Length: 424
Figure 1: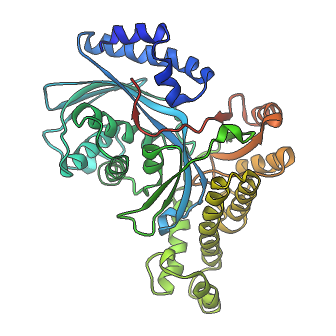
Figure 2: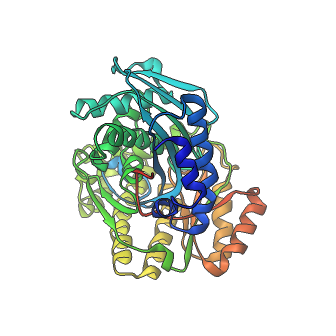
Figure 3: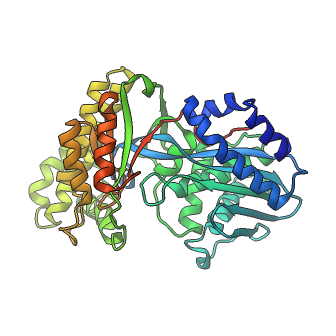
């Protein structure tokens, strides 16, 4: 379908069903239409109106439970959300990818050379090349394309804007060149490979997997080559709660060492017990070994290891509660997870900046407003908290958080039922 034809069908409502399958509510669909029309018009302006185009989407993700567990081969529960990256794309006859992201310069990527280079670290063009390189290695058809993209996943929010972009590129290749047959797990792995090898960021697989697979998804990383992935069938809309992310606007600068210390300290406990990661150790063996660990590793490492083991159990409890439609138990588990992150994993504020505690402030206010169902979100130390807020408390919660952290700081999210996908 040509860009101008697609715009006409959006304006007349013919694409409402397709949009609703991704964005769930009529209100969300209506809010998305101007965005889709804008990016389609941009494609026509830059690349013409003569080619058939596809429209694709890949969501951001929210970590529900399993805080700082994936890097030690633990378990996580995550969900895809309505904030997403979208693309209007068409095949080209050359070995060049032209990708114009809204608000950014054109990325021109020559895929006749798919070797990584440190000079590409930190660049979105390297992300594109890395996804193509990995899918090509796996034997999938790849080729050039022209695309216009936009991404409303907030950067620095813990909602994984980079993973959404990588998964979007994987889906462009899947639908343009492979009839949409590349498995969501393969796209996630290719996206992680790109981020690690081409973009230069040593991330785990959680972000890409949650974006690519979609809905509520639990992932067990005991075997990182073949993680166990399970979708959870739960209709969050009937729970009576809203999923809120509060951006406290704390600075992420100079936090690299804090993030690294969480993983490093957990692994120091594993190493002291003769293993690489904590998942290779049984909890009871860890408990009995604590007297011998003191002095070999620092005290905080032992405390963070305790968080890891109990957080794995909480993921199982949260999944069981959703599967049994027991949302009260689910909320209690989320509360326990948040308390553990604060007290044991200690990733709510940086020990190097003890007077800067925006996350602590947000959690304190949430406790006063809703009492339960809130926690630090993502890596922590700065950024966002997550809160499950009852329908009748939502307006007050949003008003208070926006009053403290600035208008628009509280984002009410929808858990969307699909991951990376072709929309139109």
